[in-house]
Length: 366
Image (tube, rainbow, N blue to C red; front, side, top):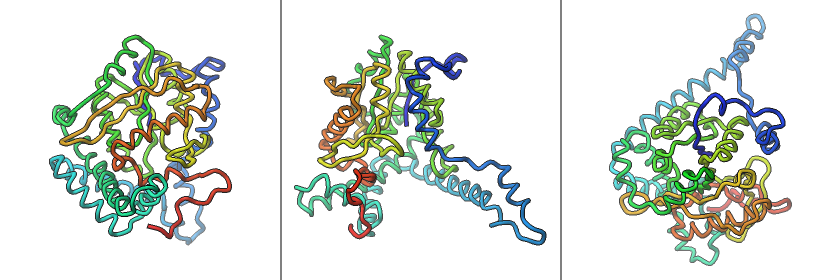
């Protein structure tokens, strides 16, 4: 997800002219996005599929596309109800429930537990095995906390959510560049509850460039949660990428979740001593816009969250993707060491290893 602060007007919404600076700078990025975008099934396709059956022949699969639409709607309805239930819980009670669910996920040897165990063994080989198991259970609890916290983020009032902000440090590092018209790029790792920053930073006004969820029925809920306090979400299309770049060049605010494995591109950089394919979108935006770069987090603390914004290393060559990715992963490592359980260890961070390397996630281990 990319968050962008901008003013919506007809000029900013217009696509850049061919040969203009945004067009030249991001043409390569746009081409990559075009390659990985999924083709959407048009309604007319379903009608043709139904009409092309032979005389007396049943419809092919009973219009499977319509079944998917109905199923997505049911999933969305169920998830909406679940979020309402979570919103009824006090934060502390929700956290205790999440920790119990995390322990259950470990005991049941779920896939999330398997991936978490593999990641922790790779990143903390010196840790005693019993301590790693305890850390894995806590980490799975934080994964469930993230889900349960979606209820309050979707339904609680701004005043009630504000009471969860126990501490905020580095706010001036965010506001000063914006006041000076220099723009700001914030890198937000998957640590703690990054979604809470949508509330904390919502007063600045921003646009969010996002990837729609695989289940279409969940999209309205995610949009509602993220747009409640000033955000405007835009799908992750080439036009959205240009908007992010133009926003930074105009002195606005953009943020990137930088620690997901890119579908294409990226560079391998060390992460806890192992090569991890790391996206270069943040590096390209930083280099081409010249905006200052921060690391932003919302870490769980007693009774709420602590938001923190720290400068990205200033001695990094922004024109060198490998150097930028290495500095990024080192910054995330330092952050993780403050509370390892709050990082997204259930995510396959080391998938797509260098050619010739074995699969880091064999199905046989827990």
